[in-house]
Image (cartoon, rainbow, N blue to C red; front, side):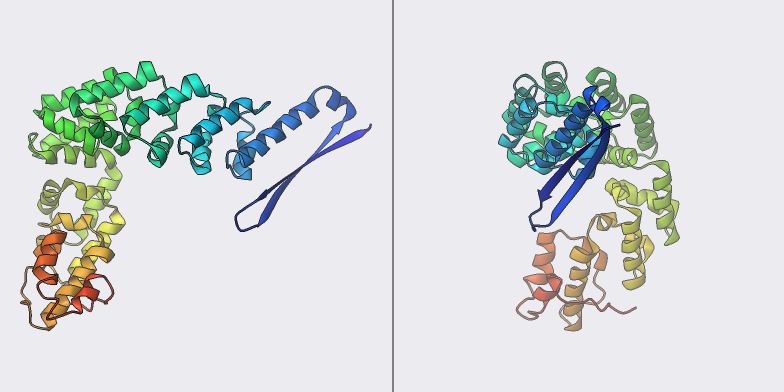
Length: 385
């Protein structure tokens, strides 16, 4: 039987002039080609070529996506790509969008996409910020503007009032746009009010960490109950911070972090004290917690019980913040400019302005090398036991 060979060579050039190619070889009988198989192959190759060249997808992703969609004509996809690019979307943004929602290429750019883009621009999003926001949850562009997006954001504005606060909340957690107000947000807010959390703190929760408010009401109720049982004051900001930390950490990770602290000598009471002073400490990775605790206890010879009183330190960078400060203090101690019995934990815990005033600008004339130490250009040799 007569065989027909259909070959398509796709060639793309990267910025460094490296040429990559993919060769498709299909063997088809003349009978099969007349029955439409050839047309199907041509459509597949057009789809792959378009996804690579116009949308920025790599070959593997493009071939995989070609199993889900077929581009017969590029008129609609071209309009979609043009609209996105005009509004600040790069090929990387577009590729990320299509990876989850390939059928976005066939959305109506005038009726479906443009109104949503203009709506979010009216709130203050623009350029790369708009693209980053819409790519963070690809479902936003496919949800109804009138039935989902606008009603949800109007509800949020009853708590956070201004467009500026609204955009802050959306940048924190874009998926809140797609949340069900009646089934999720309203019940969770009712739970907070039931514990006595003031509306002002609920408003802050939307701008600081809105994600927990989108949990199922059952999960949210469980976490809120645990936070309340730990003794957090519902009137304080720490209540909602603790709720956010506990909801973001599953039971297994929570226990591993708690055991990591206890392995350095913390009691259960000291662990609870640290969490109540700074609830965000449990958002820090277990690896970082161990690394910092090891430095405090084994390199600085600090008491684990004393460290428990300064849990803010676990939110800081060891390399960029703590070690440079130790280097500054080491220089000043070696020159006798500050006492060796200085409250080291308090100094490390100082905010930037306070630390610089106490130890950098005050002594840079007498010890100019502390500038290099503060900028991380000097090694830390330790304070001794």
